[in-house]
Image (cartoon, rainbow, N blue to C red):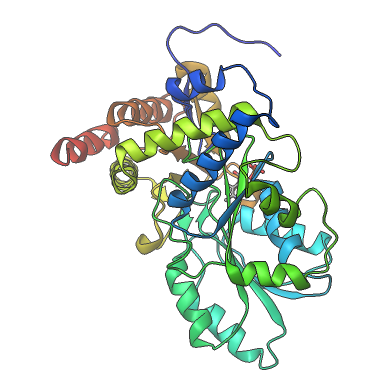
Amino acid sequence: FTTKTTPGRHFLQIPGPSNVPDRVLRALDNPTMDHRGPDFGKLGGAILEKIKAIFQTKSHVVIFPASGTGAWEAALVNTLSPGDRVVMCETGHFASLWCEMAERLAIRPEVLKGDWRRGADPAQIEAHLRADKAHEIKAVCVVHNETSTGSTSRIAEVRRAIDAAGHPALLLVDTISGLASMEFKHDEWGVDVTVSGSQKGLMLPPGLSFNAVSAKALKANEAAKTTRSFWDWKPMIASNATGYFPYTPATNMLYALDTALDMIFEEGLENVFARHDRMAEATRRAVRAWGLEIQCDEPRHYSSVLTAVRVPEGHSANGLRGTILEKFNMSLGNGLGQLNDKVFRIGHLGDISELQLVGTLSGVEMGLRAAGIPHKPEGVKAAMDYIAGNN
Ligand code: PLP
């Protein structure tokens, strides 16, 4: 492990982990306290209450000391039994990974195929559920913000599709990269388990993940037979009632979470969403002005968290990223799975300002030139024109 000394700040513009604000770093840097002592219960209780506003829920939010993958597993093992049929919508790489996990847990996914250029199709979900007359399908799993493609699924429409089919399946939603950046309404949208993580819109380092849990999901938990121990909601919820955790929580990450939540509430959740929408629109204008193609092919499904950009045939997205890292000290997201080397991903989430975005886009534009990728050098100007007119 070597670190290159480069003047100025590294630009971490991958779609998560996102940049951690200094105020959050300072919160992390506090003495670790006794997680069974009297002060901890006050902190834990306050955070468990505050976090509900981010998920827009009155239900319980379970916090795990784990990456998002852990919370994916928790959502499945707490609600399903081996052999259960579930619907999985193939929106991209992360949806596929969740599907593989379900298979490893002896759950039987039925994959609704997708082309990795848009979110889930509610009509396809409705048709599949209507065909299941015996109501054997136990859950519909959807990725809200598909980080590999920059496409979102419209969860309220997915909910309506399930209701229109008159089907009792649970709705499990991964918003690991959407939460606290794009609108998400756990209660209003009738989501049963919302899965999320700390390292994206919440502006924390990786290491915490979440399940928001509906009353219906808690009922399913009683019947679910999949073996579980560390991920079991029951002891969590029992301990959380007094602000404590059944095993050692990530104490310093909870200090950081408390501070990040304060920062989000100070800005206002709606303003946070509007800022992300603005960053994303400016980025898309830059991409179009360069003459490059946005991976998401359906404007209603554009992500406000990241933009995946296709490089022209015969050119290497990984080569471009390497050039940008080497010359301009900026990290961009790589293409995942079938998109490897075909796209690069610009993260515009979390703790980001207009000037940081313009700096990011400048790095991309100079990188395109340095890597010899055909483009028109007009992207940064298009983004600045949009930002200047919308401030
Ligand atoms: N789901 C989505 C949409 C993601 O973006 C990620 C990570 O980027 C994951 C799941 C996996 O989360 P983690 O890498 O924190 O385990």
